[in-house]
Image 1 (cartoon, rainbow, N blue to C red):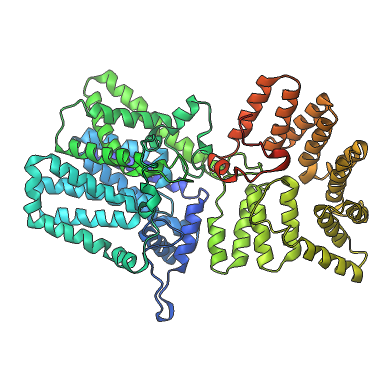
Image 2 (cartoon, rainbow, N blue to C red; image 1 turned 90 degrees about the horizontal axis):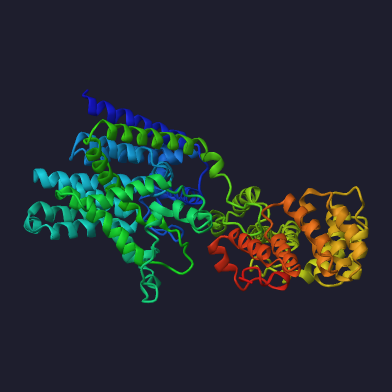
Length: 639
């Protein structure tokens, strides 16, 4: 084994170990969704359920079949779902080495290092979704096309077209790889003869045959892919954005403007670190100023096509940070940067040491990233806020399949990590109601309204069923007049029906030692507040503060009481205490900003409002705009 091969094998081993360490990181929601869809694939009883697309997955389903094979061979576990994707992700590392080694051994090793230690690719290459297979199939296609350019052997271009087809069967925007290769061939005059070669015709046939199962499906059932959504192509949407550049620059750019990139993208996807992103973009730019061979032109074309084309496409409601659309550009970027670094090394020993230090940094950074992955991907940012970036898609798939218990378990899992997320609370209430667990439905709908009474949520049907539930609890108390839970729920329902006198009587029946006593005191605090009986309200909120789940709420309302009385210093004290209990409480921040505004401290007020808005994901801000009323109707406005 020569020195180059040994170096490459050692880097590959490091890359494999990093990915093995990443295998135990939490599943993201796309993976959970894919696993549910994969479980539904079957040929049982002679009935085929082998779709090429799904209403829940906006791309062809080859990666779902890979997941299905994994859980069939290795068990329905996280490891089973991810293992084959992880193997494919590691194959991509070696193919990139082979591609870049076409220039030099050093270029191959450095390109391998750049990809092996890239946090974005480490996370992408182990997930049970389309990322790992995309990189592998695309890099294999490019390597085989490059081999054909040198050998003219038909087998190389036919296999290259086959892997292009597999990439398309994994994600529809892989068609840009075909576009890039065609543009490259057209740009190289001496290669135009390709179109008259029998091998190229065979390759075209191989591509069509590979994607024919998907073509057949779409002709019969239509397509759910975003690339076929007409709104993607409306003139008002066709404008350049910097979305694709976010693949490389999202961390440093958002750091410079003082914002958390996770609130404009997805917290579940690892970003590219700033050093790697800037390094790769610099490598591509410098490649433009070097003498270029055909492989460099091919890499530059494959980089440019997705970066330019996809920067023009957007869809209302999609995240601004859909940077993973530009995934195809990563392969040429690492190859071209590997070549550039290899040229750098040739300048002398000092440059060599510089590249060695860079390599040590990249490896160390990757190790730190993998070591912190479990904590990093375990919960969304500001997970104790009332609005949290959490995806209900897996639970909704279970609901659509009639598996309500599984949908409930999925929603409870989401609420375990984001317990105040009102959207998930409301959805959980609907699931309980669908299962005829009416008391549980009422309980979580009440909890949602306690957290944010002014939010008009479609899934919260409490107002719709209010009279029926009041009657149900009245009937229950006729047969069991000492049932404390029934007294509490009837009291809460009557409160929402604005019959506060009757509700007070029922709350008084909730004994001090009962688990619902603190919650009953919270409602009494609200009732006395509505009557402007401030002392009684404060006393009841003091009682409810003893219950951990109601400490933050009670302190916030004590602060609101003080605002209503014009006691600004007392309001500041209570609201600050509320934020000590829950730093993610955007509503207490909103009220705190009001107090500072009343005190003439506009700088503090504006700063707090800006912080508060940045704690709500940009996609959620768009969605809930207009759904808030009452006290917090101006929560999302600038002033």
